[in-house]
Image (tube, rainbow, N blue to C red):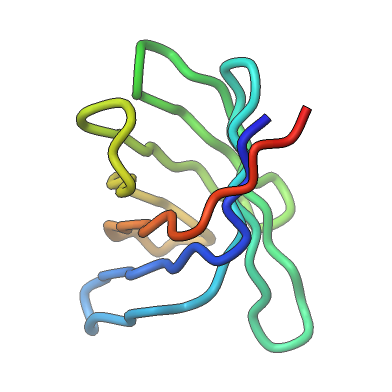
Length: 102
């Protein structure tokens, strides 16, 4: 398992850009989890790798779906699109420090 506790999300939607929001990313055995806190609520998107470096995610609690792509596969940036509760946009995750866990 690879865990990135100090990752940062940049999001873009029609009304602007938000940068540097802290998050945690876990990648393990073809699965991915992205979790962040907004106000007092945590949101988690999780999903599966559909091809090397390409993930499809969902977050049922916020009616969300997303994609993330990593080029090359060992790069420290994930990029993709998201759809959540009637809104949509793009996101980039800077992975930051890594903790390899078993």
